[in-house]
Image (cartoon, rainbow over all chains, first blue to last red; front, side, top):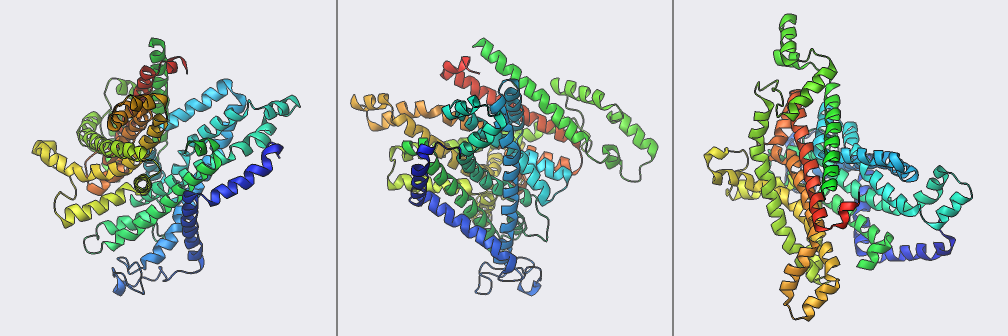
Length: 289
Length: 315
């Protein structure tokens, strides 16, 4: 493919060995896999059926039947967290998808063409960065109607300049390389060069950034649904569960404890995974440590 | 230096202008007629027309945009549709809560993060470094509004040390005001401190490898003096950048925390104004925040240029 053939066999095996001995990477991967598994299992099985409201069992404490207790409508909190994981993951992944889908082509295009186009793309980037992301996301969801889709769009828009910037910086570093020069000399167009040489070489940086934005997306989604601007009931979401818990915390603090922990653990896992990936994939960082 | 400043100022102003076009056009395409919302469903057509004329929304879009921008430039943000007071007064009232809150949070975060970061860097690779940085990882992952809820449960509901929410107003005494802002500031500060501590640590690690640090140690300066006087001062540039970004974030990012604590700040003003379709208030606050972000970024860049002359000629 596009990687320099001399280096291909060595580093890739090396990277795998590095990854398996990197503590951050392993812990992060384990946590993320666990949360993902929880979300997938929830499609076929949850400890309790959360659509059946059991008001007689409302706001129960921790027990064998309800390991995390029940909420104000008698729904099992563990089951709600499992289903809520789907929502968090879906919103964050799609928001990252928007960021990569629009940002990476923009960044690569700017790097490939340079000149006024590069300047224009970067100034538009700066413009988006000048908007306070959270407040703007609140505005977008509040104005266009609260829903999971609008939350995805609102979070996704602010991922675009992030990926554009990372892709452009990465691409600019690859363009002066000899093999790119050779490809140009042999008559390859900028588009083909970008697809065959630039993208594979910036993929690792994009992967690391993707993990970070994924974690930020989970936090942002939780914030929006806490304000009632994310997924709408009866679809459970971690942020919404925290909102529902807030007024009942005095009598049942466990209502707020577990959804919050779910967010912390997921974001922590993603951040550890991102840190680990960066250590493994970016030789510059590896040398510094 | 002067051409650099002029160029930076010009791009800042252009960004602001572009932002005003975006804000105005996004809020302009909204469904809903503010006049009808103010007067209710049963209003007579004549009353609606009269109010529209009074509010200026019967004018063509371009004329309204120019009018609005000219107003912004002279500090006239228009008049709120729901409160019927000048927007600038509403904003001033709310900034009196949001600005001290952001500053308090930034101060707390800095007071926690700098010592922790310097400490971890100086003990690099030891158990205490691993532990503090592990804690910082957890801190970054904690949603601030959840942390706020836990703080309220422990310190306001359980121990009854501070109020659980609301704001008495500064005229009730500075101490009461600060007490009301304490928990919100702590909950805002924790995740920020975790980020800042990580940045401080890595900046310190970079500096601690420099020759002049070895020289300072070799000539017999105590470890502590080298760490705080020589190393930290040189590690401050990335730290200041992050602090600049965090201040801008804190000023705008308090929207959720203000909802947890029922604080009458800028965030809640926007939040309520959106739901009441009081667009002129939303536009004013958003423009103010965008201007703040741009100004803070500019200030950080200028600090850079002062610290490092090479950056003045770079774009």
